[in-house]
Image 1 (cartoon, rainbow, N blue to C red):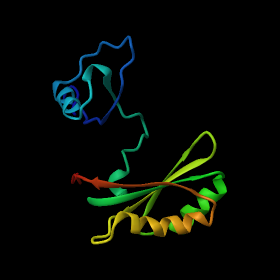
Image 2: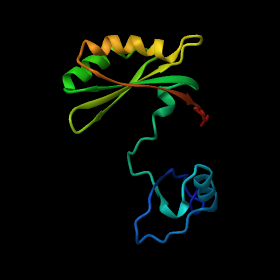
Image 3: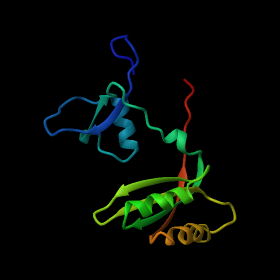
Image 4: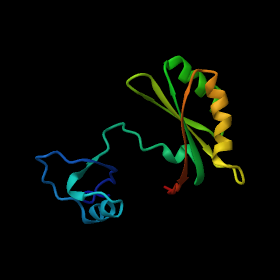
Length: 148
């Protein structure tokens, strides 16, 4: 988005403060509506100096994926499982939970192989680190690459 004919700036959408009455650009408001969000609850702010763009495009390619989720009681066991299971096609996210650590492994969906069968490979590897299986989910990623 160009402001006042100057340099192009990048923005991010954030929750609107109760006292914020800034009018949202109609294109942004329409995009939020299409995403099922109420535009009156959001505003946009420019990226801060040094803030990085989302790295999602660098993590995955478009297509079907399977997310495998586990709970670990210690950070050491969670990181050990990540070290064992992450490879060229599998990524991991780790989140602190009240009682431990949640780790979600993201891997490509293997054609002709049931999700439960794919999940078993992760279950057997994570079990050796005392993981509690939280199940799996099928995801469809659509990554749009923009040439700059």
